[in-house]
Image (tube, rainbow, N blue to C red; front, side, top):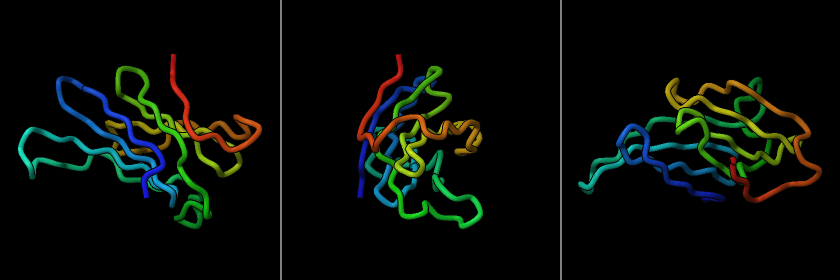
Length: 109
């Protein structure tokens, strides 16, 4: 189930990102045709050793750096994760204890 959905035009392409209740982050490129969806990022945010989200959700997402990265507010450890869109979702930064309690949305200035 989607917790947050954001759209972004990256290099003249249409892109939509979705953070889910199970902790996954999914980013898709789409076009005007009905079957033109292609995945750019599909990653689970959370415990790398467990390979799951640790029961925590991806609550808020926002594109940054012109669409090159996507930031996700994750309910685990009240953290924010930064994923590189071009690498297929490699986590490039994690900010633990970034907020006092679970948040549901955020934006980048």
